[in-house]
Length: 108
Image (cartoon, rainbow, N blue to C red; front, side, top):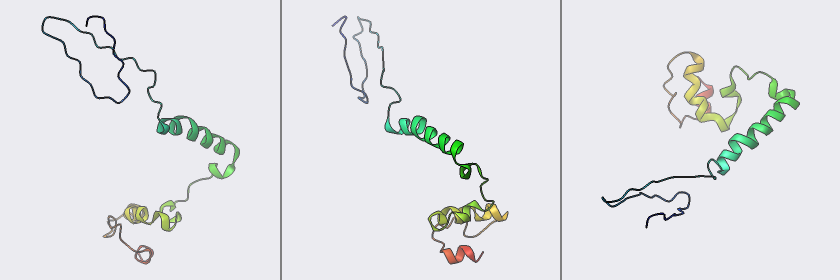
């Protein structure tokens, strides 16, 4: 009815409709916008912790090794394979092959 107010919880898919004889206004007011765990980590916790680490620990201010993709070890092997061609300045047959073994990567 005219003047009614409806609360719809966040994330509820909805659509307003009105009869041809009437008018309707749809106003959305959100006080819980950008309050996810991801937003909290990305915008508050991680930048704060990282900023403090950079300020207080000289290790975080040292330069990244030129060969940082190979420096990261086995955990970064797929990244190393994909970026080997970029580091070497040429095309590499294994550049997009995520199944390359560590020995194949080191033999290049």
